[in-house]
Length: 205
Image (cartoon, rainbow, N blue to C red; front, side, top):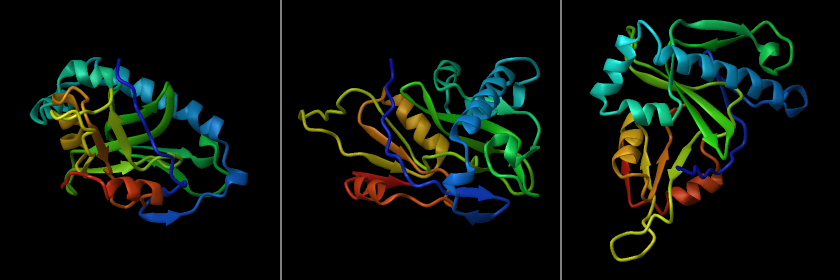
C-alpha cells in the first residue's frame, strides 16, 4: 500500500492564464471536492474503457505501466469542458471553469483528494500540465516507507518539474525516497515546500 505525504499550500488558482487569490468566504471546499471526485472517477473509467488507444499509447511511451496508472487513479478527459464556477464551489460570476482535454492525475492523501492535474499531450501548443482551480496543493509529494538510502540514512527528496518523469521515477523506485513533483510552473510554491526543496538531492526538468 502506498501512502502519500503532503504539505499544504495557500490556494493558488489558474484560470484562462490569469492568476488570482481565492476568497475563502465564497469558496466551498466540500462542493469542490464532490465535483472533483466525480470528475476524476469518470475520467478514470474513460481511460480504461473503450476507444482509449491514444492516452494509453502516450502513457506507454512515457514508461508508465497500466497497473501503476490504475493505482494512481489516472484518468482521461476525452473532451475539453467549460463548467459554471459556482457548480464547483466558487462564488457566482461570468467566468467558466475550464477543464482541458488530457490525462487526469489526482493527488490523493490518506483517501482525501487534494489536487487534480490535467496533462494535455495534443494540440498545437504541445504537452503541458495545469492544475485544476480549487486544488489545494501545487506539488505532489510522493513517498513510501522511510526512504532510507543504502547507508541507512534518510534519502533526500528529488524535485521534478516534468509530471511523467516524476511519476516514472516514483514507479521505478518502488516509492523509496521522496519525489516532489511541481508540474504546473504557473502555480506558486509555498514557503514550507521551498524549505523542503532546499534539501533536495537533485533537480530534474
